[in-house]
Image (cartoon, rainbow, N blue to C red; front, top):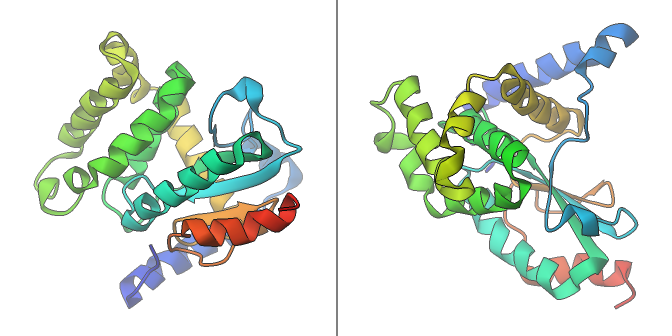
Length: 225
């Protein structure tokens, strides 16, 4: 979703200023910002991931309506192309979406516990977005929201993981991973969601859903269709 008023633009300018400061760090400082692993969640089985295929990188905010709307046509395209196309989703918590950070953090926590449940949780967020913003959470404390998302995320990964999901929100590492995802998006020039890169280059229609026909027009020439 793209910013549409001056207050949102001001927020984005502040984040761009933060990005500028990050880019001015010394080599030693910059090294400390590099995560242990490449950011993002591989779609499908990691064992079947092939970097030589057409690579789609998607920057998604799990509580962004435009991100939600972009998922079905992308998923349809992935099914059509099969092993010829790979996908990595990077969580990108937009500052003007309620509870974007905590929901993105939940994705990191679940991914660390059981990566096969990551996309299940992402789709659950898409299907239940209205529960996580506006009037449904405006009167809730942060603690209450986190507890609600702990219960919600546990449905995706399994009840036996409840304690692990809960402790994940007390674990500094999940916080740092979520921040690293946002910083990575900023380093790629991401300002809104969804935003897609195909083989490292920006796809059209930043901040809006790409339909199935457009995915075909983008990818078909790359694989000789």
